[in-house]
Image (cartoon, rainbow, N blue to C red; front, side, top):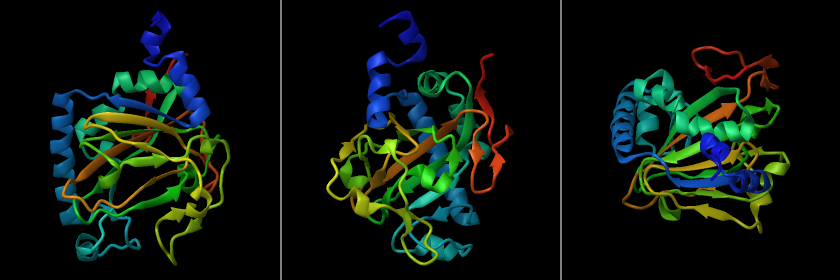
Length: 259
C-alpha cells in the first residue's frame, strides 16, 4: 500500500470499485471495545426513546401515539440524529479512520448530512423496501455517501443490506408504499436485477452512494439487528424540496475541512 493509500484508508482499486458499483464492502472495521460501548449506548437510547416516544416505527404510518408505535406487530425502529443525543455517537461521526475513507470518495471537505439508528428487533423486525436514499433527501449535487455499520452479526435472514450494483448511475421515480405511508418503493424496478447481499460481522462497515438501490428484508430470526448509518455530504449541498442550502450547524457540523 502506498503512502497516499495509507492516508486515505482506501486503495485505488477500492475507489474504482465504489464508483463502478455504487458501494464498497469494508468488512470488520470497529474494534471490539468500541462495539461494546456503542451497543450499550444504542440500547440505552432506544430504551429512553421507547418510553418518551422519541423514535419512529417505519413499519406503520407516522404517529405520535407511543403505545401504537411500541406495540405494532411489525417493528422497524428509527432514531434520527443519535449524535445529538449521545456523546459516544457524537464522537463516532468524527472518527478519523471513517473520515479517511470518506475523504477518498467525496473529497477533503466533509459535512454531516445526518445519522440514524435503524433497529430490527428479533422476530418482529420489519423490512425496508427497495429505494434510493436521495429519493427521500432530494439533495443536489447527488453525491452523498453513507457509512452503514453493524453492531451485531448480520446475514440475509436478520436484515443484511441488499444492493443492486451500478444502480447509482440513474435517479429513479419512487412511489409510496401506501396512503400516508412513510416509505418509498421501487421494487418493480429491482425485479430481475443482479443483487449483492452484504453479510457483515459485528463492527462491520459498508459504504454506499445515495442513489444505490438497496433493501433489507424482515427479521424473523431470534437475533436482533442493530445498525447505524452516517450520511456524509460536501459543503454547499442544497435541499431541492426546501430550496435551501444545508448550512453548517450543530446538527450538520463540518467533520473535516482542508483549505
